[in-house]
Amino acid sequence: MHAMLNIAIRAARNAGKVVTQAYEQLDKVEATTKGTNDYVTNVDKAAEKSIIDTIKNAFPDHSFIAEESGLTKGTDDEYQWVIDPLDGTTNFIKGIPHFAISIALRVRGKTEHGVVYDPLRNELFAASRGKGAQLNGYRLRVTKAKDLEGTLIGTGFPFKRKHYMDSYLAMFGAIFAECGDMRRAGSAALDLAYVAAGRLDGFFELNLKPWDIAAGELIAREAGAIVTDFSGNTDFYQSGNVVCANPKVLKHMLSTIRPHLTDAIKA
Ligand code: IPD
Ligand code: CA
Ligand code: CA
Image 1: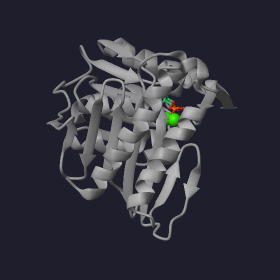
Image 2: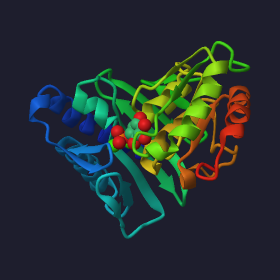
Image 3: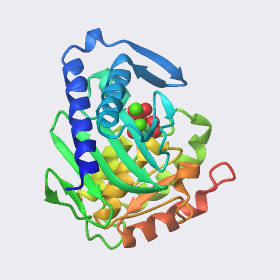
């Protein structure tokens, strides 16, 4: 295994300990709002610090873009770690056992390694570019579905931006009419990892941030998925609008979503 992936795994497991210990005493967790329906806790911050400390210890020159502390420029900004210390904070605060730590390494703008770690289930999803994706060491592969019939599609609701509700509900309705069933589980990083694992046949959400996407996108891609924006292009870091599925399901999802794109949700 690549030394940098190894460090990402170590950092994710260390943060996992911080998060699971805090989850056992949820009444002690301090939550504050940082935006509309958007929460941060002392645990998000402690987990993020633990991840950055672990990585800095091994690679003191690298740069970081992390959800809670933003950009930390190192002397070497060709190596940038993209970190979500706790993806699924709302689930965490409410005691719903579904959240993850997401860590990716981008080298000169290309994601090379990614880890999504579910600390309660001890499920570690990992990938290195060109080397496939694994769950706890076992190779992952997306499902073989050919169209939307009978599929299970994951999504996320635009709870921070409810002005997108009409367009989103139109897309949701169109997909729901065609697929088997849908899930809104509350962690975009795990949604992408679940597409990689064949637990979901596809996933779509709008307005995600780079730290929600970076690791899960590589893991899904290395398991055979394609990840695009709502127009089928690869600019999803710009818009945050993401569609992910095997190539055939993706084609059906895009053509189902397309009629409902508005000016506000162009790509
Ligand atoms: C959120 C989760 C959620 C998604 C939101 C994200 P956070 O991340 O991934 O599933 O719907 O858009 O912001 O805030 O829990 O790290
Ligand atoms: Ca997140
Ligand atoms: Ca987060």
